[in-house]
Image (cartoon, rainbow, N blue to C red; front, side):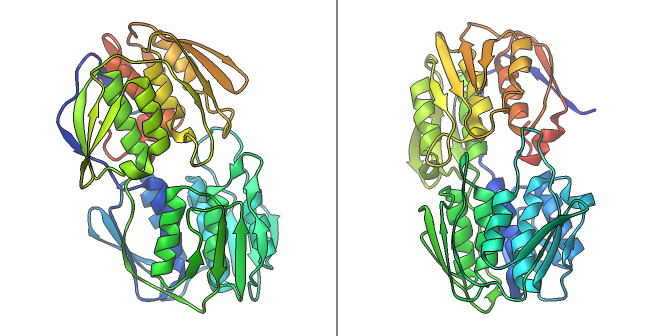
Length: 408
């Protein structure tokens, strides 16, 4: 079983490039299915397990996939495309469900296994199905597969806001179906994240007609077909945020390049409160300074423009060394606290009550053997190990390869 052995106490220095965005790119691969003329080339891509899983799925469906270079992929879907995304591939990654809308829009039928992925609580696909049904599809779940059929998707008005706020996944899936629907579709309660805006920009470049990206209401005028383009994916704000936390927890100063600072306001604001300062040097270069003291924070996760749930674990790791009391409230995935007992093994003092965790900052963590449970928890434990005395052994780091390219 793979593990990281982290010898704590070293300061970080130098310059490192932020990778392309995992969360932005995954639905973009699915969008390749919609391009019946020309190939779609995506650039600034991270080389991640989830990326390879998505490309494996596309190849199974009949899309021709090639790599012009290490961080670009070309997908040609002009040929015959299958309508079934099998369990053997979809079980590896939740984002595989993104092919549901594109397959339905192109073929009139889609059969996609119910998805798998990180075990951080129930993440249902109800809103995906609700949106497709609003477009006129007949949807059922049979033998563990979502089956959707429609001779012609028809534009409609719908609201995709769920109990925990807008759903980025449902917005992407329904959006990709609606671009080929007849007439006008209005999606209210749409996701606001920059990753959704990036998807809208890509689809528009492919010939779609979408207005309202970055707002809660998207208006889509259906078109007859889409074509391939050459497109560069935004950089990964969560990877950048994780590296910024690394500066704070090790009291270091270094430079990030290819950094999407303008899309990181919620993350940067909390880092500033915590004593980690980011200075825009222009052209994607950001100086990150964590050499001062750390301060406690109160943090509540929320959909954009709130604080992202994908950064909660990393900030908690840093707060274990901030004098005073920090409070973390998780409103997106209430079960996303599996890193808490592992941080406690490193000497942290954390008390969890319901969907909140109270952290009592201390002066030093001590190395130990810890077990990673999901992608962001893995990153949090590596960060904690950077600041802990002696050695920290982080087991099951295969999770990291799903979201970070060569974090070590």
